[in-house]
Length: 259
Image 1 (cartoon, rainbow, N blue to C red):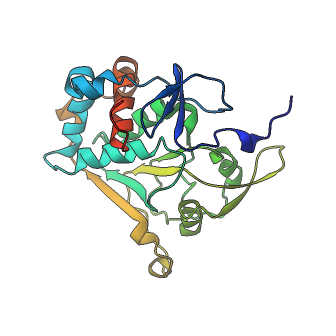
Image 2 (cartoon, rainbow, N blue to C red):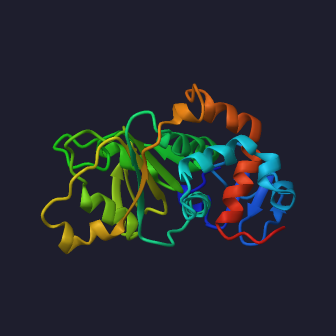
């Protein structure tokens, strides 16, 4: 039986998880059976909303406190940003760039969010959001119906591709072609999270296009070795151990009322 790809995931507030479909507006869990092409890696542990995240995901909360480094607005912001990455619509026309030197733990947040989003998110190459004559345009096809797009370690001396960013952020119609597939027309609903050691530049038309006003920058300057000797396995381990509670943390931060 043929099913049109546009018929899947039509309600932006429904999140498909291994244990059921979560309505992000009220926390109700619906049975499987709808046309859903994507799914999170884990089901949310709603008990953590009531009993506390320090109890249910202590390693994750300790990491966030390290990243915040005494800045009171960082954890609420990262929580809200992560929560918005699970909703299939664009609320605010911004993209997040987490900037910092090597070894500051900036990519851990992106890695954890990406692992939890699972099929709802997709990584793109380092140059996807950068101006380039050798653009891998087929990657745009992979962002169809994704709610989160992730890019890591932007190249030194690069320049933002403001037209690509603005088209995705504004929800304008995109034309993409997959390998060996027909052209696809769609509108992006994905939040964009990028990390990097280097700050990309804007072209001279940045002020006119307004791309500089769409950029949110989070600076990470403290070496993560001060918090944990080895962070190479942290993202995988913390998702395995605390993933359901971390997902609930993000969902509630996105505005979900307590179920």
